[in-house]
Length: 279
Image (cartoon, rainbow, N blue to C red; front, side):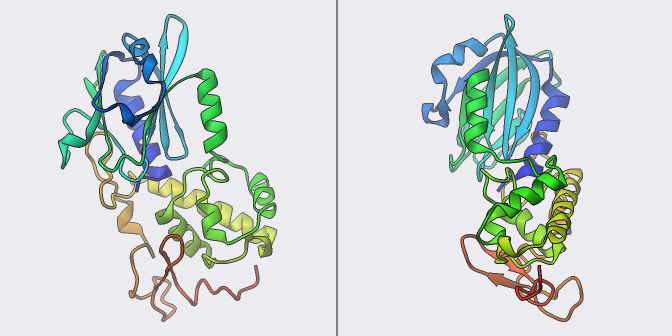
């Protein structure tokens, strides 16, 4: 479930609590939770956490040792969480990695992932560059409006799947795609190549507004998401359409929110998001 806002909340908390701390030990409970780089695990012992970055739905921890930088990239996937030691989990047996620190506000960071759709990757600088190039498109928080227009105008197909295509736009999943499209008054199945430039600019602004608002609320705690300190995201209280099938449209247009079954469930208002409006 974690998407860009949740990953950003995680990255910000890690910066506050662990930046500058030294990694003393990293214990891996099962080898298959590490996608690549497991033989380099011993290098990280004694390294200092120099930076934390978010790429799409992933969080990259940058460690420095003897002048060299290496990275631990955590994919949050559908159920992955990075949690501090005091944060309780429903199923402790699914804590697959434990990282012990000294010199920070927290003494331990754990990687919890019951369904294991996400993995950790241990990468050097070149490896991180390759990882980013093959996995992530533009960042929706930082992409400029003109670049976003060009990106969309070069694409074909339906709008919602494109917003969720991680190699095109990195970080948006089903929850935020639904919320963005409702606020932009665009049907999930609109054909991208029929959107006018002005409509794409509106979509760009709405996309960034929704994501920033969600980050300010700590993300959306739907199902299993918790921030590293155990707090729940409050943005789910502001969801207008996600999971609201059969409820009145919040725009008070008189229609009910409907659910469209495709690759992922789409929640939309058939009046406010008509697929017949000019784009």
